[in-house]
Image (spheres, rainbow, N blue to C red):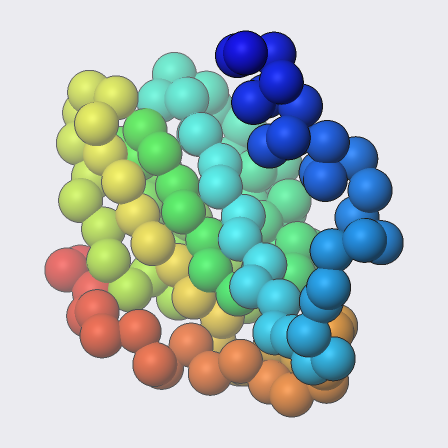
Length: 120
């Protein structure tokens, strides 16, 4: 019985054309990055974030040093929320400075719709 139930639930996932999709959709592009607090490749990581089109960027293991480096090297995004810590619990949320075109529909997503303000 569990096998039959799993097949019923999983089988449609292998046939995406059978799943109806709306004519217009908005795509939310998320970049999630674990910085690794011991990593010192600030320029490489900042360059990757800078060239990756995303509507929202979540960073983990954000230290005060990492936050400073991200803020100084990444101009495409602004920090909306941050809680840097010297252990592996620091986080940050970045949004584009300018709305990014949505590849699905063409309209621009407005990052100012997020009800957060920077703690920095």
